[in-house]
Length: 196
Image (tube, rainbow, N blue to C red; front, top):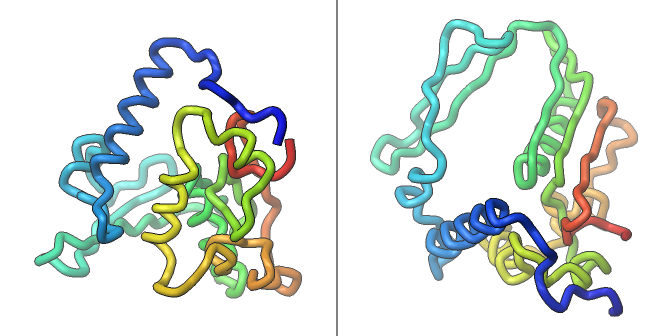
């Protein structure tokens, strides 16, 4: 396809250093068995403490699932009657599925009124024009993206799985689900966007 980047676009030094650090960390943390070195990644993602006292209308608690594997999750409890879900990249994918699940229920104390996805990490089995055209830009490479999908998906599944391809042939039909207003934010050099 024409328009493919033969070399990286001109970026400020600070941005290039940040992308190089991210690329190094992401490559170093990946293992050949499709797991992530969580101890190494903790260096780049320090844990903020939970707070039983609401901060900006949300309290939080940490719940341990398996102490031998240091497996835990943080439960966020909003104190308001309406809420929106927001996520960036893979978090955008998660936010979409949280809202989809929430839309199947009618909560007595809460209404999910919006979804904001920032460069959501959705995909599909076929390559988009942008994916091919922007394969030389810094950041998330096609090879790294493919590795993330393979590590994430159930064994034997392809990228048309409904958790990846939210609008694809196997996607959940949202026409009967209470799905809130949605804002999708996409940057110019994001290769997994559709269109130009």
